[in-house]
Image 1: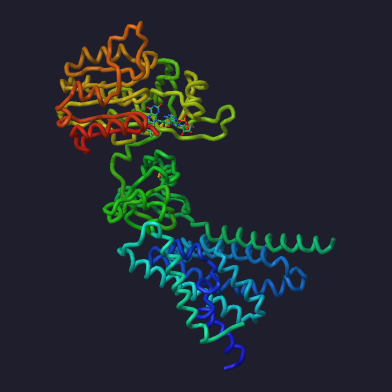
Image 2: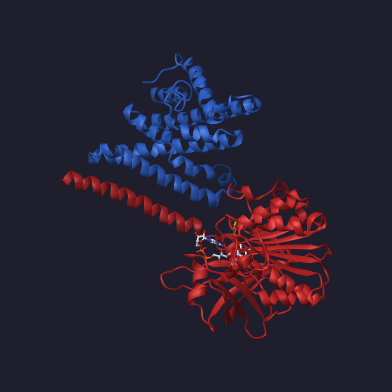
Length: 198
Length: 369
Ligand SMILES: Cc1cc2nc3c(=O)[nH]c(=O)nc-3n(C[C@H](O)[C@H](O)[C@H](O)COP(=O)(O)OP(=O)(O)OC[C@H]3O[C@@H](n4cnc5c(N)ncnc54)[C@H](O)[C@@H]3O)c2cc1C
Ligand code: FES
């Protein structure tokens, strides 16, 4: 296996387990907490995030290296990345609604939520800071998305498990969800020796 | 300086390229072409342009689904059964659908998009709903801020409705109001009078339609009217009736009284009409006539703001629930109630009727909001 593919694979696994966007970077928390009330919608959102993160990581990498760097406009990356993400999500939503209605009803309703998901922007910014190649960026996007999918599905299942438990009134709903996410994050810290990315 | 220009130019260019792509995608994806709508298992087949919402698409085809909120997804009145091609139920519909309705394929038609061929099922009565260009034949001031309008249908046309139902009036643009709106009004005239509909309309401060009606409409003007809608109708039982209304809420009750009069009904009925003071009362002569022609009928106007001591008010005072307890008493349990007016009156009186032992299924109401 070439060195490039290997490092891409390492980055992918690291993004899922040791550098999980949600549980170690604390990005994308609003949809993480609000959608995790039901397992099925969590999986839907997780898949939609995975798709958007993977594709926009690639797109943004191309825009950054072939438009922003040559023009010396690197400082505009925040604004440009957001525009690219928003337009792409809009495009995918339209295409899905028309071409794959079944998929649209399963994932499409989550797409507008994703435009404002900071984890998607976070992935684009990290890949630049860490100077990833194109392949590594796409792998990082995919890993980030799968990491989000894993985290939100686990949290949704936990919330389902405790639905009948007696939670103190002040902690019901978001309160106990935040505490559970914290404990999950601690659990993920235990994996951090496994692989490291810089 | 140039760097600023390059920056602005680059961002604009990126934005423009993306916008152009989206615009093209919109053209490419949003054109659904013609699709067919199958109504009631083949009883009618419509060919319509796809991409719109079911409610509006049907309206263009002359099928008028009731819609109190005009398609904003906030009333739940526009329900109908979609047997094929409706796609899954959307989150905007769930608040208005019960579990049985969902199992039956009932949908909120202003939210469902017509993307492919669909099959729907609608009750026969809906086909009776039509729209006309009606002419204002008479306008009468019942009291300040309350008018009665008579709209005549085009020659040869008839509207068949049940006493208690409502119609929708489409306003024209006037003055500073640049939009045309649809508003619902109960029909106050007799169902026998099929050549016209009458409305009793109250002025609402700053209201688009009621201001147009009170200040701008003149005899001879025309407007679009559709109907009949609604299931607030006279039942065909023999139970004692308790009618409750305030202000323009008298309108559907008046229609029901006309219908009882024409049936030669002897049903026992008491109409409690709530007003703040004597100045808010109207149609007193007509109510007197009903008392003469309907042996079981009594009209009980009541004033909720104590009348001046020197005013000669022979009637009742106070709120309706207390009067029901006093005048109907235990008979409430076996009676039926017809309530009409604002939310305050309806909620207060239904709560009182429950407390007196009237079951839910015998309380009929139309909330004017
Ligand atoms: C089934 C049904 C039957 C109805 N029958 C009648 C009828 O027989 N006679 C009749 O006069 N009206 C009736 N209404 C109410 C009518 O449809 C309109 O809502 C009302 O005339 C106000 O419309 P507008 O365009 O003048 O005001 P809008 O421009 O819609 O409203 C202007 C403002 O007034 C407020 N507002 C709206 N309605 C009222 C109200 N009733 N009292 C106080 N504030 C209000 C609104 O919240 C808004 O802020 C009925 C409504 C329904 C749903
Ligand atoms: S018309 Fe009111 S919800 Fe559809």
